[in-house]
Length: 244
Image 1 (cartoon, one colour):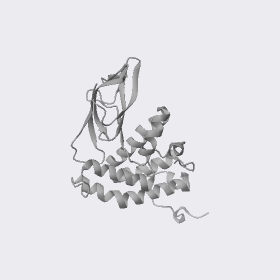
Image 2 (tube, rainbow, N blue to C red):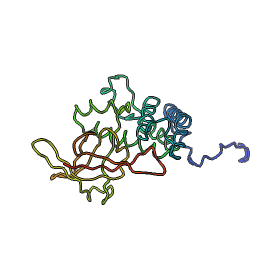
Image 3 (cartoon, rainbow, N blue to C red):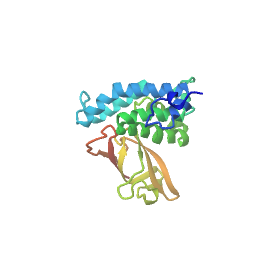
């Protein structure tokens, strides 16, 4: 048996103290991780550095810059809704193979390493919006929204947080009232990532309890205002207003 001094050990990785990635990941998960890391560092990092300086060129606007980066992520990584088991049915892709949640988390970690605001944008679109539509939406809603959100042709936001109560549903003041013409929402949401997007998953208090609604951009009475930030600019935060 070799002496302890003769045993060669790999240098300790402070980000993976127990060598989980070396010992526990599948080859596919490592491939997803490495592909995301290479793409994030080569394609995304230079943009994020410029955005932190307030430089959004060559994009015509901050919002359009976020949209184009989202489409780039969709085209290169297919990250939006990537864990949804039957997403291929709504994409018209019977051979669609979902990522494991581990692979998805590894990809988002690499995006987070470049910019936390960018990772927030991805998480909101994929996990907070596509997942509830996939799990609880009507068949019509799934067919309409899942394909365009997966391809980042449209962006979505998750409207829970409010000015007075934060993300505590018990303190929610936004209300929903059913009428003969549909549901009427009244209230405000604050610091909503992707709030400038095309559809909002909005939470409101109805008489029977808190319910979720899909509210499309352009709906009468639905307005938004982007907040000014000094950093994490790819995670555009907005205030949402619902007035009847």
